[in-house]
Length: 118
Image (tube, rainbow, N blue to C red):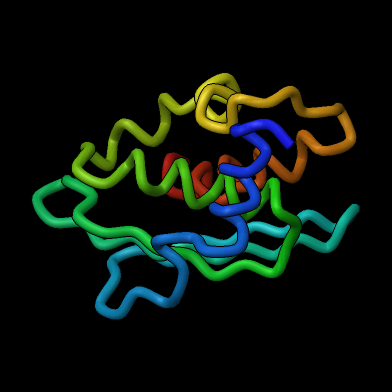
């Protein structure tokens, strides 16, 4: 097992930002019907800055790790930056090759965040 695989397993089994965030400003959801992943994201925003983020998920290791890693990277950033997040940003965080069948898992977080950018 390489370091990146162990990092993904750690983020999926022990995500540092897992759980329902009380007093959040945004609750975003996304589902992947093809594999059953179900994601709820909670964002707390003050003065247009994301000050806290968490999530609940019923899904695979890739979707949980991608969500946890991306949410960590968003804390302290302007809420408007969400619309600029690309698939490549998620892949850079994961640092592994994702098969085409697992892309929906890795990018589920983007589906949820897209609802705030719309």
